[in-house]
Image (spheres, rainbow, N blue to C red):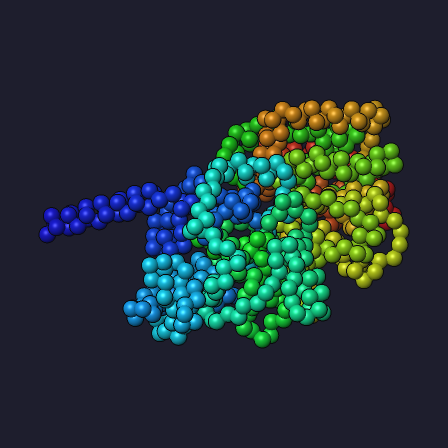
Length: 621
């Protein structure tokens, strides 16, 4: 009996090894939906390897003409919208009309069954080359209905060039081998019919590759033409150079959130006939049908087999970065202080701003946000200073966006995402950004004037975003509040019109101001040392996501006592400043690579805060 058990176990292990060897023998690029379904558990094990993932073509950097239909690809992006669930045949029965035999096929990881038209007029599978006469038994008891979640995913808004290059460097070179005889069909081939896996479809002419519209109704043509502009289809919140959009379909019940950044590995669907599908739902109007079925040349479909949530960058040498934190901080402090006209105090606060991230939410209190308002720089002499400073900032952080705040922009720009019920989708707004996207506001061109209703809405949105890290999305009949984590830096001549608890009045060094063009050039030269720039980037990413920090009981008591003294001595301090001071203390301590506040550091922090307060106009009591 024992011998038989050993033989059985050995046979099973040997069989399993053979199976894994067979799976590995098939290149991951050559996987098909059918192959994946048949070997799902082993394929999932293989996809756990980071080295394997680099062999999968990255759609962000690829041209669609270099990708085969139903090829396994990877796409990194942000969830911009979520559609209603899509119903499909998880499995369906197919009958050979010549022999009368039937078999069960899987409908997962594909959009539709492609069929040839037989003489009998029924649909036949194109892939059944040896037995072309096949029909789908739409009402077979063996068919299984199911639903898949559908999301709209776009390239990450505000992703800076160096971060894009970093993701490209993880991509192995991909060589496309074209096989026109098996992988492509001519669009002029009239014997082709597309069938949805759940219900019959009527064919309808739609937009061509150059967005021309063919329709017999002149008014409908004008309307659809405007609806189907490329900007409307892609629906980016801000311009994205080389940006892409995908409709992602999920099968495993994973729930994704708006603005979440993820990697999707899945089978791409590039069938041009998908844009010709018309829903049988009588409630869907032309605009909705066209919006939800865009050309695959512009918005391919992606059937997900694996989702990787990207909450933070993985820094392999994080311990080394922390051990060198003071040295790296010194380099960053030198650059920032010189760019800020020699103001070392402002550089200290800006470093804390770069490291800030929300770590606690309690009712109306949001701890971890550290917005800054920098004022009193020579704006008349250096009109482009905010933009020049931003150009350096984008070298340090993964994601950022520069927004010029003018009266015209406030009254006209769409900052808030809004629900479009005609197209049944969420139309993006400029503030629909993923967490840790640094938003830089330039108020130097803001002039007095009257805010329209849109202007007041935009002002309220910016204020709520800064103070509470929340943004209300407009669903016309109601609003939904979404939590955010977007660091905000404001440049203004005087105190910002957006309430900001941390204002830095620059103390401009005359020599630095007179030689500022040389300062800019020197900063560029200083950062040409690749190690220095890489260290700064990794320093910010590592310390931003350092979870552990300790305010021990003794230090908490000292902080409260010192704050009471500050409250009595300085008119600019009120009780609301305590939270900001605690946040400042945490990030100042972390900036030196330390995870616990000690007395010496606290004294230094109080000194810095007193100096900042002394520069502000004194309030009356």
